[in-house]
Image (cartoon, rainbow, N blue to C red; front, side):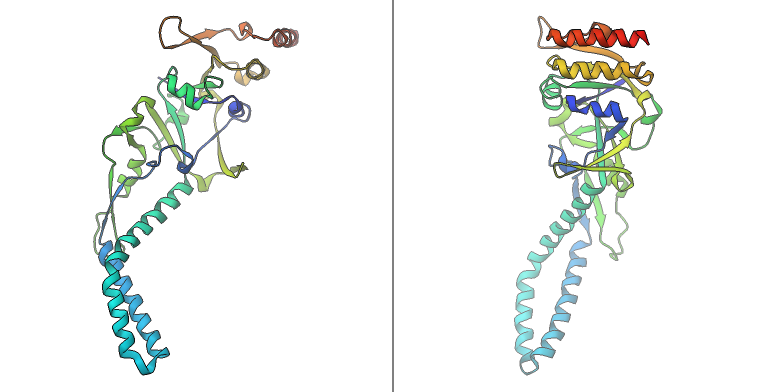
Length: 300
């Protein structure tokens, strides 16, 4: 089976550098990424005990600072505690989950692939309105034979993950379920037929900054790439750059080239296998450059 990645024309750097980006969930267009439904066990009591300890310390501070009016101060603190503790518990839980998700969003990186190369919505959204290209991967390549590469499940309900408070005496935390929840999405995204690979970004050796965004890159073996599908609206310049790259080194020679063409009758994109020397350029200048380039290649 083949898997595919829709990219814009600038992502030719994936081929040039043999690296692929693992994207942080915060950069995705779905606010539910890596965000299951949590059931927190023992946290109410844990937070209440924490608040009580805080109040005890506050009492001691008041005792030191207001020795002449300790009783009155205690009564004020007690009233504040009784009126606000029920508000503090859910707020503390929200803060805890927000902190947890913030950390997960920083250390987790995702590569998303799909089973379909002719999805009109994905061509429009992820390949710059058909101006980019699609990379075809060999799912049987050893690069994809790892535990962190799985097919997405699409469900109506968010997956539930149980987390137990520390020192609560409970032992029902479902950390493996938390990891599995990373591979569950809403049925609204089912059209994408996604597979994803997740990596720990703290282990990444190639990191850069672009437009204020952190970019994490991991090595990608070119042997796992089977083909390239050129978008039906790709510019001559980008076509030329892509063709030139594929002919520049034998490490690319195994990659098949296809052109995406608009079907004459249906709302459909056809994938047409193409000889690399028969790519058609709308601008005659690029055609002449290509002929010259071909002459030099074959002369060698």
